[in-house]
Image (cartoon, rainbow, N blue to C red; front, side):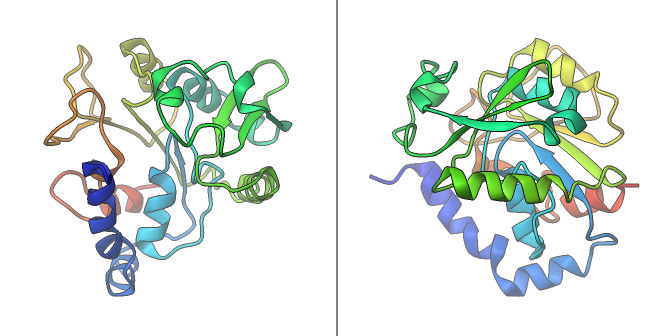
Amino acid sequence: MPTLEGIRLKLLMYPRTGKLFTSRRIKQLKYKDFTIISNNCWGGMIYESYGLSKQSPTVGLFFMASDYIRFVSDLKAYTTGEIKFINPQYSKWKDVPQVSGDSRFGLYPVGVVSNGKEEVEIFFLHYHSEEEAIDKWKRRCERVNYEKLLVKFNDQNGCSEENLCEFLALPYKNKIFFTCKDWNVQSEAIIKIRQLFNKKFIQASYEPFGRNRKFDVTDCLNKLV
């Protein structure tokens, strides 16, 4: 039976990726060579919403919150480091509800990438094989543009206030945090978005694209210098 989230994502597919909308949206961009690093699929969805090729390795996948903070804390080392794949049942996160509660777990590749000192796990949710995942990961790692970089995080996948504070302390000029909750932290990088049902974390269908009243993604991307 379809979920409300699944229905919302399907309804948003055409306004997000339809050629009429993407062609109009891309004309509003000053730059087309930006990189979005994201803890979930949002980055890939943004590239699709402008009809652009994906210039980021964090497309079609997700991280648990603490692993993502570790990843973006040493981004260059992780994107040039060794990546390998493990049996999903050996994942250190296999018992957390955000992973084990999804019926798709075990059907997609789970990668482990190292910066030479520590490892983080990557859940390649929208990939069909390890070969596809490693091929696209390596090619997109080479496309990262550190001069026009947007680092995005949200309150999914076990995000704690400590994780949020660590994220806000990262030395990136352009970073945003999407949430549906109130935090005991104040920052211009925190973008609160009202959603109708689940209030525990923001859902993918509520994360903005293009120009809208929640958050102007186009304006944000145009300021990446």
